Image (cartoon, rainbow over all chains, first blue to last red; front, side, top):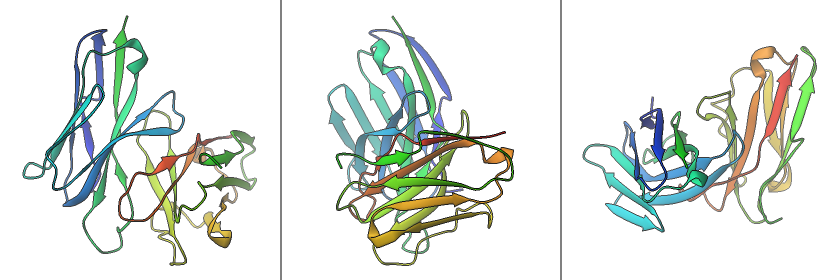
Amino acid sequence: SQQGEEDPQALSIQEGENATMNCSYKTSINNLQWYRQNSGRGLVHLILIRSNEREKHSGRLRVTLDTSKKSSSLLITASRAADTASYFCATAPADRGSTLGRLYFGRGTQLTVWP
Amino acid sequence: GAGVSQSPSNKVTEKGKDVELRCDPISGHTALYWYRQSLGQGLEFLIYFQGNSAPDKSGLPSDRFSAERTGGSVSTLTIQRTQQEDSAVYLCASSLVWTGNTIYFGEGSWLTVV
């Protein structure tokens, strides 16, 4: 499978703590994206990191990418109860065959932030 | 429109009936995707349209599933002779180009087959 796999499947922390989620994938990629989903509805794009980038920041979010290990991490600093959601990584494969254009999603990490 | 619009938001149908789910992508977006998500699961790719190119239908789970995109804009996902295992959220997304740019999701259509 070319899907990204998030780890852990579930994470429970207190407000103010940092949350770290990891994503591993199997094939070469053009980019990797992180999405957030509340209550099984539409996904919201958080951040995109390209294959030639190693780290990217957006507000309280920090994403790293290690293409040699085929892995990425999403760090949410100073978490809030409102950060409670499912977080998915999605990979855009570099394969220029039939998979061109498709994003592969993992099963997600369910983050719960307790007030 | 401002975002990806999907209808209906919720649909309950009897086993064996046909259903149509509609997606109106963001204006100007040439790429359109359909995904399916069962309860507590990740997203399962169904089909992908890019401009006037032949769609990538490789994710459709059976020949009961079909999709079309008229005029390069609105798309309809049709499920014929629905089965209980078709119950899921069907998510539509669009993006500007196919090169792995950010894709924008609609709120999804909850389908329940009883």
